[in-house]
Length: 431
Image 1 (cartoon, rainbow, N blue to C red):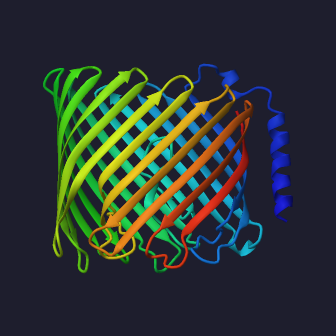
Image 2: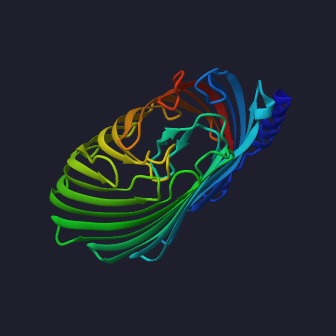
Image 3: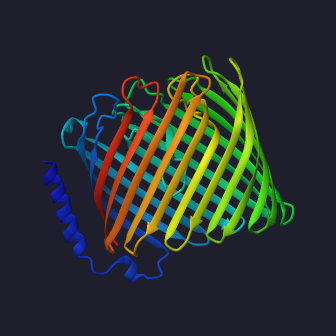
């Protein structure tokens, strides 16, 4: 039955798209807006279909994803929209079949060149144990530190409206609101709703000296972990030597109040750093500092913090390397009452390269250690992915990916929690 569905959808799609000889872009070459329906067919092999640490079972998962993409941009209005519904079919356990979705929308409105309204929204329904970090807007997906065990189907949504007013050439005032929602079909999961309000102010006194201030108020409602009320104060002074190099001094103070039996804490974090452009295509950042956390119960915690990042981009290649140490906060709860503040050490590497105009490859890898200092838990996470994409025709592309992730945590007391996967698929777009 599964093969019949795939063959039927692929055949109908082929004949529809093969008959398209004149595209909308050809009819209106200077069109500012593009509307592109698409469909993706994907086959995945996984060594851990049930997302468990013991008795792992391999399986093949076929995913059919119809969707739409819409984009446009001018001086007043900009839009970037993508949405896809995916139906996931398991080869060995049809009772595990499920429907999911993945979508985003970015809107921009400028009634005046100095006034900008934005609206961002990201929504996901999935069972991927590595939950995507919807706050990360980079092209390479990043994931939250926690990894779910078991076949948990969940939904996430992140809504972020914002407004920015450039009151002078060198000054800006802004405000943003973030609403994060997480829901799961598991009755024991920690579902949560996060509200964060952030006003901000920046001003350059001259070409060399600038300041930035922002404040965030956070309210998190959890179903299992204690609820949270949080405040974060942040300020930065920047001095520019020239357009290529600058130094800065940064200070953050956060106050996290958890309901019992959670551990509340305050954190002070002063840092200094330098940003330098080695060339038009290569930039670097080095930031060093110290943090001190004072909990409502137990011993205080302190340590060095630092970030070293190198980012490069040319006509064919983009890459980024980042080393990080310091602390990490899981404001929406992880597993237990006190698993919210952790010492963190990590490295991330991402590389993408255009071999030809039609063929591109990319690689990403990460490793991190999270030591939850107010709870008896230490996690180690490792992940690596290799991707390739080939544009067969203007409307047809094929892609492939192999990847591996491993989570070592005391909550999995038997075997390590890991998965190897391989994916191959194609995407057809109505132009």
